[in-house]
Image (cartoon, rainbow, N blue to C red; front, side, top):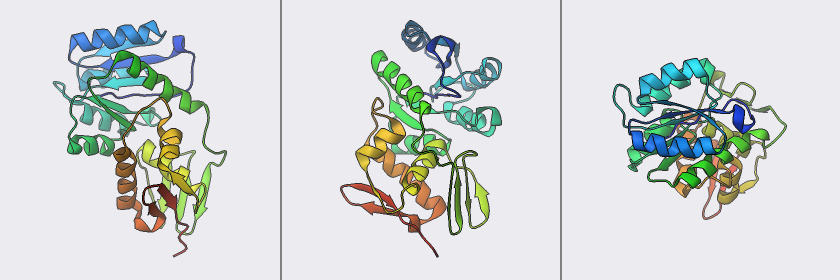
Length: 239
């Protein structure tokens, strides 16, 4: 499982990556390919060490496996998410586990993306480049969307719903903001994937579906309409 942390768009030689996996061979292969691209790479072999190293080197990107000794990737992700220092990170899990419950647990922990092993080094590097590149631009210049009983604040990555403030994982937030930025507009699935995950990152249809389901669980069904075979639209609710 890969956990990617990005804070600001930087030149490759200034971009620090923390690679966390308890299998030395995998670490060596990924590290070699990332360093060949000019990234600065630190390593750790378990979730607790990942947290300790992250505090010291303040990486822009963290690659984190799930199944590790001492502390697994899910718990490490949750702890990092609770630390304000890493609130703006992008998280992608890369794991050999493809079960639905692992997939859902990853997003519940704060993941932004999920990829299963094995993955070719060139594909992984392309994913990293795509994730970093997407932070150069925003979908819209708007920073706050306001509706009756609902405020979506991009600057603080928070939602206020019926006067209750809460935070949601980054990819859920970006998807919510994208749909809400143009109420009534039908966003096709491929356009959502391009805008939220990028053209260089390959994700399945269920990735969008899981995020929408999580949003519906938190906000309710009234704001999201499924256009069968096409995509999703945001319904401006005035109730």
